[in-house]
Image 1 (cartoon, rainbow, N blue to C red):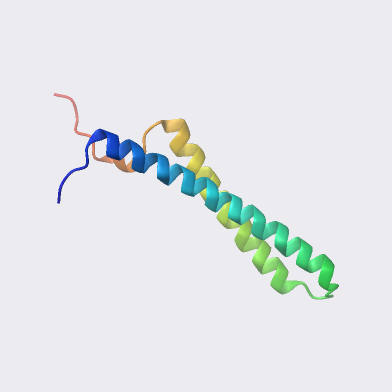
Image 2: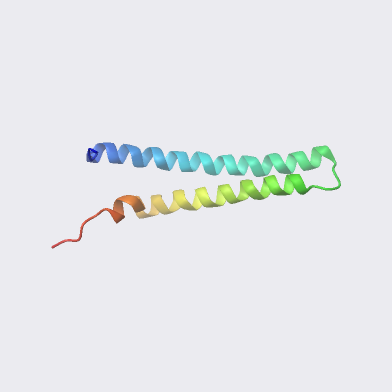
Amino acid sequence: MAVPDGETVTLLRSIRRWLLVLVSLFGVLLVALAAVGYEVSGATDGALYAVIGLAGGLVALVAGLRALTTLAAGVSPEAADESTPAE
């Protein structure tokens, strides 16, 4: 398997970060949709909406934290693990 060059790695890292941001926004949208669904339905038992909102919040939290850590580190954890020690 060929090792990608630096430009390809940078492009793939950028795509990964944007996908993490989009997934985080999807989680926030899911939370908002669950809240609207609960209010509109007028259901007395909102277990379904609570589960959907919890799942959306978990997705938003994990994806958002992952995106922030990759942005703060400046390099992906996978690339950092593959680096060789200096001699």
